[in-house]
Length: 97
Image (cartoon, rainbow, N blue to C red):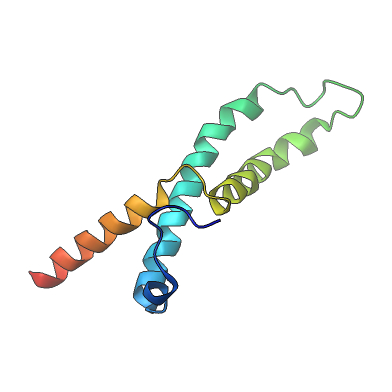
């Protein structure tokens, strides 16, 4: 699913724009990860019959990060497209000065 306002394939043919889009998506994934992290902090690794203990606790941030990337790729919260457009405006303004 393509997020509303996402760049077209023609836009992404430009390597510079593709790089900006990737950065905007990474920022959105990071934001989603920050929103998901408190949810996982409430889960105690030793609870339940399959509690993973210290190992589970050590890998939890990676799980959160991968879930956030998945949510972002599936359309996310709609942050990547406006961030992409804003980053392009900033670059264009900088290039003109």
